Image (cartoon, rainbow, N blue to C red; front, side, top):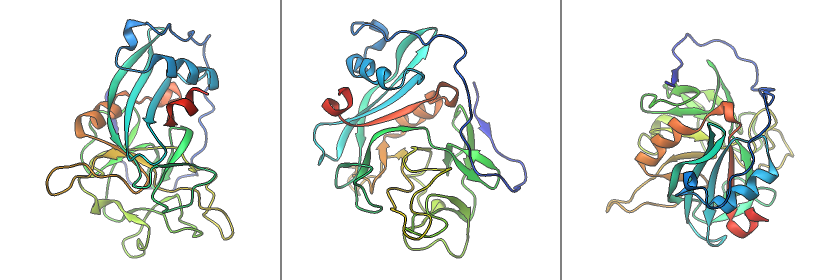
Length: 267
């Protein structure tokens, strides 16, 4: 399935809402641990995750050895033809420079990546709701993809109306807010992780706790010598893995991100 490039003129959009999709039929049973189609993924972890949310037909699993680690593995398992398959084998990923922290204990800009289980994020833009975006052309995302335009800003200033929201702002995108065009390589492509995202963002009003904003799966940032760097709170992977992720993560499958220690995720 080819990606959907948004090119229509900008128009007002209602806030993003859950899709209201319902499952059409019985959910396939979790596969056996020795299922050969899951080679490259942690099948035992996947089986545990399916018990937490049987309706999710896709899992993006980000696993760390310790809560202070800045390096993880990322893999994607997807239901296809009534069986779980490993659609992106374990690859090296980077997380926050301070490791991970449960989202309830996290605060905006603390350098950690939120841990827990999160849906695919959705954010309203002037041209409609999206989960995928980037400074480069759509590589074949399985949902609406917004090519970053001048002034595209993702709000990250706590306790302001724009926190956790997308806006077009060529003047006031400052402070912790991110002018997305400034990160040409890092935001070559990105996927929104649904940690404290619309429609109910905590931290976009006075007195609310700013748990997280601008938490994406994006491309690795690298040093001058080519070494990958930890993130400020996102999850990052290399170019090839990122393109595969955009061509694999399918909103119709109710994808979920599981981020944390293996023992915690297995439960």
